[in-house]
Length: 85
Image 1 (spheres, rainbow, N blue to C red):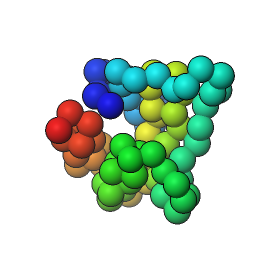
Image 2: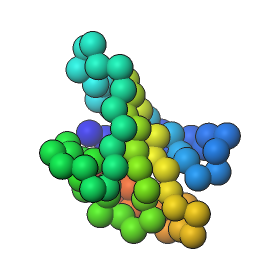
Image 3: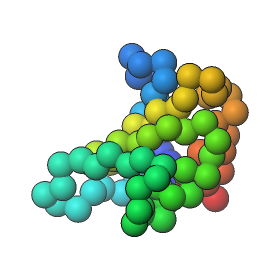
Image 4: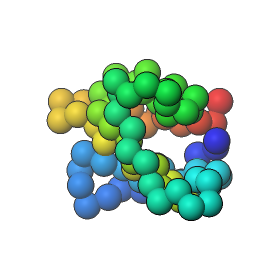
């Protein structure tokens, strides 16, 4: 999965990450939490980033939500490194 675009959302705790892969046909959307078992590989890797709270995967994007006490300037470079290797 490669990151193609990062966009702000109306929620300052969330960012929209457009990616080059789509969910399987018929899948509406999936919410991921850090403690969830059986996470997809890329989602599991993103959760290694301190400050990420949860993620929502839909179609060709992931909305990532951070904790209140974390900062996007610390999180976004790590997201880019993980998804674009």
